[in-house]
Image (cartoon, rainbow, N blue to C red; front, side, top):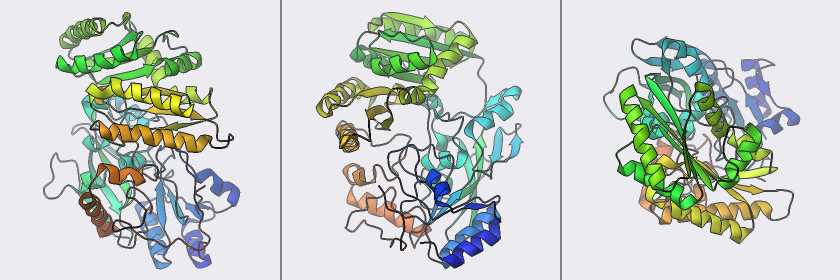
Length: 477
């Protein structure tokens, strides 16, 4: 239970509209896009870096744990307050502080919505490259915490490739700035270290991001297949031709039928799989690459190859891809999204493994993923009201991730480890590596009060970081 004295200080700091503590309000902050839940004792809404400093100092004084939260669109439990305490919601720190087009930079607060950066500069011919499927809702603080990706990161990279500097607050209230507008700051890359640290080391209060110029020409292509193996093989063949599209997305038959019924984007209902491919750059090069990709796709037995003829047609195809999770929600009351990574050459075998797991557990599993970089997103449909269904979904997800590791892959590509996959970290990393990660965490957060129970395994042993739960703190259920 949050000490009364701590609550009084937070209320005095933020005012009556600056926090939530009623059970019916707190219940809205006990989950994200994953399948876990845990309720905070209070949710606070700072409006400035100074507010964040004061909040963490109150938390330190009373020994209370603190968890940061953006829009709550995460898929690994990163913003779930596993041990209760104070949840810091950054929704009111949503200003774009500076747009510097001459240097192709912007400075934003953590509550700025990802897409709003592009909307602010697109009329001047610029955009912000990382584009998670939730880009209309997800915020920059969460993107930095999870090192978010998206369909177009095959060519552009993930968030860490576009974050040049950050301002952050340590759990003792110290404010530090690292990096900046310059291309390469000297010394240790603290910006890179904290991007993807999932809020376990510091709370980010400002972000310096890279802006990019819009390309001269964009072409969106759709290749349609009667075999998922042929579809998966195409990705490796495109890479072998030394072609790097900005996006290569794959949807299997189960997924594309759900998407088409919801969005009417033009996907064929009878296909086994499709590839959504995007090329951009100088006009002559893009037009040449379209023909090269056409040749590869047809050579890998694509039954049809389309090129979007208008901007409206292109936007409709991407609407289908970006709204896929909503389309799944029309079919299943609940679903569990995984985030494994495999080498491109292992996409087809991994799809076969996913189908095997689906049959084993009697659960429908659809696939929509960033095929260009092997970032698999099997979506496991289940009904939490059916006894044992959630447990089956968890087991199926773990089996898929273990297979990803076995073929030289990883347990996450962009969703983060959070509390969903932390017990699998010792399957991917050695004890020495995990101990080094642990030491970094404790260097920034020696009392383990920032987002405890995330990233590292929590089982007993030398790698365990203990933080006694507050009396009466919410438990995961």
